Image 1: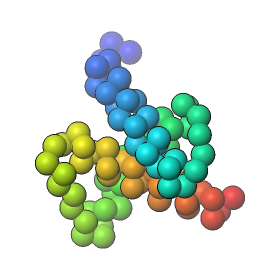
Image 2 (image 1 turned 180 degrees about the horizontal axis):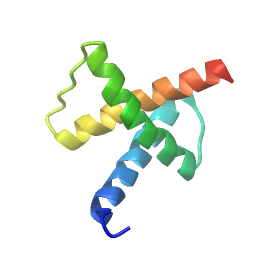
Image 3 (image 1 turned 30 degrees about the horizontal axis):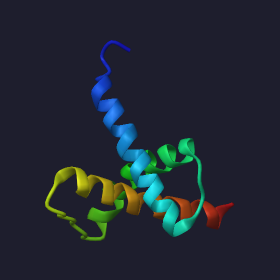
Length: 85
């Protein structure tokens, strides 16, 4: 636990929370823990899928761009999970 940057972890969780909350407006769902999980996992999915599709977001601020990418990833992830389940 000593090597983990606590501030970086906190920022990641907050950005995941925001991204998951934004994604919930489009695909539904709720709950603080779900928002964080979908948002953080969505960040990985979005940062992998968007470059494959040739999509490069530039919203003028790196944090806004990261939140948008995580939100898009969370939406994709929720939709995929719903198709499977």
